[in-house]
Image (cartoon, rainbow, N blue to C red; front, side, top):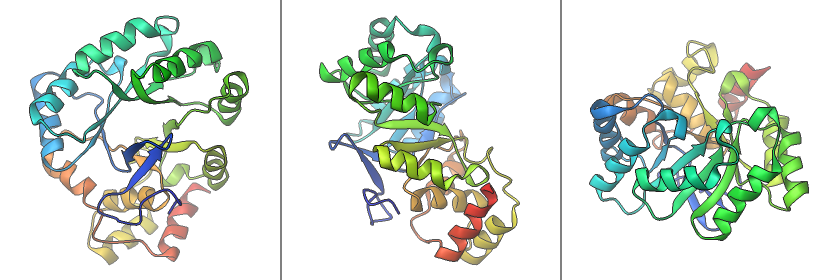
Length: 263
């Protein structure tokens, strides 16, 4: 497990910018819209999720904000993302997100994709300015390459706290993970189940040994690597199952076998 991931498996977090604790297991919210989406989000909060990941393009910031406000929980972290096509309109869309999410300060704000395929330090500067103004607690990016991360750092002196990418056992890259750690960037993985064949031998073997599902093995594998993971589900039982990974740990041989799926 990463040095700054807690050793307490019941409350694993990564700390961003030395101040913001981000749960290692959160909920992806893509597609959770309208009243069914709101109810699914309330279910997720009820079963213990304390990190909800949304984005402007998901068109569900209102549902996320209403669910969090109605739940009345003090420790929920919310991530939203600036769509790459909205580069140059950062202030407008930050105001919109804050209003829809019903918060005065956003926990984590990401650039969703490199605008036009480029790193765009000018866009990054405006996210950093929002953080410095106290409107956002931490800022980062999504789907950026290492070279693009380095370009932002070189241009502004500020390295993104997070890079959210598609991640899972079949995409495991030890060098890429190590490179993020060397830069002090927290790797966050989306689509963890879509990224991997859940019937793969190492996943099934670990699931059978520990009496859990292959999905739980995948989530636990992320946790033990210190990678934030945001599986998506609108079903309360699956939400609870996916988050329930504190009662077992993968041994070194199991982790190595699952890592090897990425080779």
